[in-house]
Amino acid sequence: MIFARRILAKFLLLMVSMGRFMSLGARAAVIDGDRVLLVHHTYVKGWQLPGGGVERGQTFESTMRNELMEEAGFEAGKNVELHGVFLNNNISKRDHVALYVVREFTKVREFEANREIAEIGWFRHDQLPDNMAYGARERIEEIFQGREKNQYW
Image 1 (cartoon, rainbow, N blue to C red):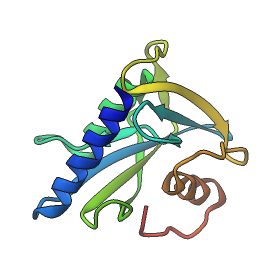
Image 2 (image 1 turned 180 degrees about the horizontal axis):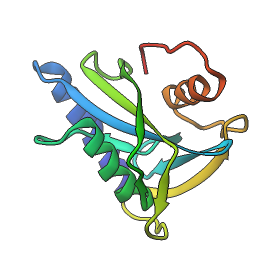
Image 3 (image 1 turned 60 degrees about the vertical axis):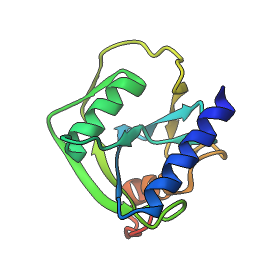
Image 4 (image 1 turned 90 degrees about the vertical axis):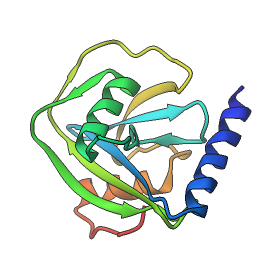
């Protein structure tokens, strides 16, 4: 089943990249002191920042808020900061990701592993897991170390 999801995800991204369509996504860097929240999907390798694709009628921010709740059970506070919009050209030259920094949040429910998310975890920004998405690692370093932003995910 996991293999089928991975194939489907790659197929859909390929279809998007072949047309004039642009893929838009939004992610959250949820910060608690020196820690950041990461999710581990069932269908892609490595740890990621929570987030997902922008659906018709949604904004980047509403997508980020919905995905954070769905994937991890956290509600973002009122004040979120747009860190930037990045080109993710790992799969397609038409994939753009908006990243929000969330420093105020409420835990609404306990996390339970499901079809999409295998686990969530809090990691110190200077002790991130080895098997982590490169773009997510770069964004975390920009946020915590004040590094110059890279325009690519």
